[in-house]
Image (tube, rainbow, N blue to C red):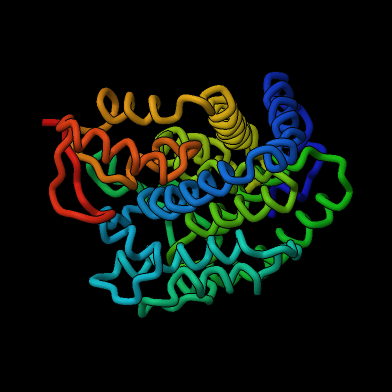
Length: 347
């Protein structure tokens, strides 16, 4: 809530370099519909790859890791789980799928967030869908001993602070006076500072980020995993967040380290998205050659057909299958096992 109390102090003094990044992001947003109209098949494959990467990465940031073959089965809807990690993995799957499928974007409220939290822990014995009842200090053990990095407000203030945060955020968003991504950055800083639930705050914050990006028309979150890009830079993610939360309780914090980081992540997602679309257009006549080149020179020593499809989303599964069969017949790759789950390797 603190970011939305003194609005002039919080949103004044925007770094000059951030303006150029925001302009690049808005250019990308403006081109999305053009890509959607021209290459719907490619975007469908990109969205499925992004879905898998987002579920995997957002859980991995919190240390919830599932073996790759099991992860695929859970993502595809396997109902039986072997451990707590798989249950949490499935919960994030359900939550992000619901966000992506929704055609309406209701304003953020406490009940909406608790609904997401309930989905996250639906398959576990955890008390999903409830605000915290105990203090949940943010600690670090990097120095070799327990160090309190940040002390969120106590549970007795949580509901009030979260309600006020969403009311003030929604009001400011409705005014249209501040760039949407800057508002999302401030929202996440406050949400994680309040730390409203006992477990799952980081995952909730990333779900809210995706939800608000889609609400504001930044559809790239459907086609490039924002969570994956955060996972790949998670040291910076934590560093910028901690910098923006300093003096938060006093209302003297600085949202710009975190907001600038988030903007860079989104700008990078648009770069990646546009490069993939452009590559698909340029290489439309040589897709088999591209698959062959990737398998023989770039793929891991051992891979599955699905790995190639994910690495080359602009190429249809039928083309990947055709090239794999050709390379098999010419003995340039050999199979272990059969069917879609067969593992291939270069001899």
